Image 1 (tube, rainbow, N blue to C red):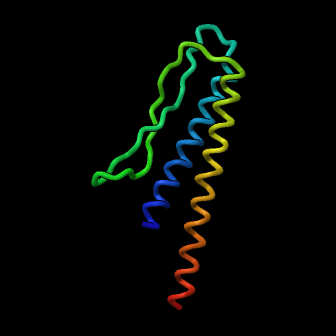
Image 2 (cartoon, helix red, strand yellow):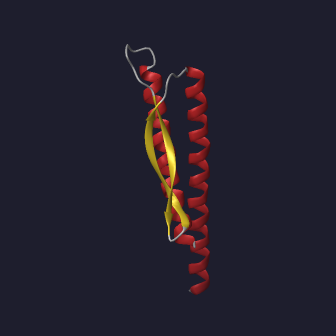
Image 3 (cartoon, rainbow, N blue to C red):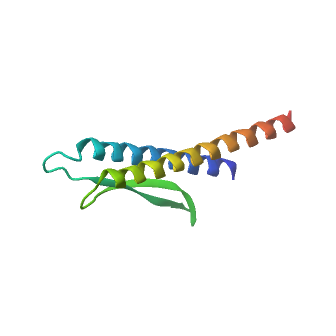
Length: 102
């Protein structure tokens, strides 16, 4: 259970980072001629009938704005922090388990 939580959190961490990078790219190029903004969408990975993390796919969006990208970046930041906290909690749990075993 602990290892699957760690794996799921790491995949979520990577997905959040990719969402933030793509949004930053959109902001930098928002006023460029013929620029096509993209979103990063998460797709649930399933293993043995259970969720086992996420992967990402990049899809074009019709238009973007600074406000929209601010919301995307804020959401990615919160998701990143939540996944980092899960990783920290798993580390604490494993440490406590090893202390009990010793």
